Length: 120
Image (tube, rainbow, N blue to C red; front, side, top):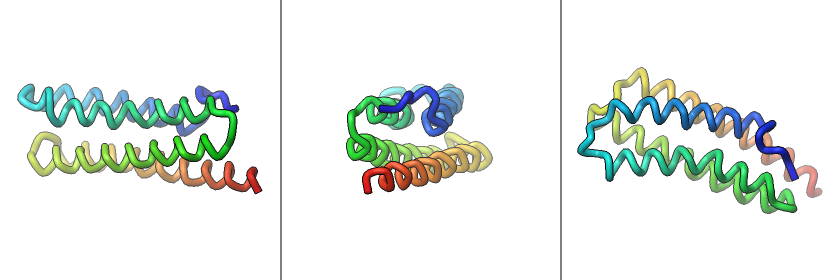
């Protein structure tokens, strides 16, 4: 079992959620029940799954939840790209969020490898 609040991946993903929520304030209200809801769910899913996985009794379970978090990051990135292509967000904001997403994905990858090596 891990203390998720001490994990860099959880902390960075919480920062990402905060940045995403700041961004969606700028999206058109017409997207409140469409794209905005999807973006919120994807972003929130990342730290939530890290926290849930950290509370599991095995590294194998934790790794499964990390995999779900990576999927949510890909989903979020796709939704941000769509928002950019629809001219809801500019290239600079998209690039910064993609940088944050990529950093979290790299940390998850390394952490996942560490968990896997502990199982062997």
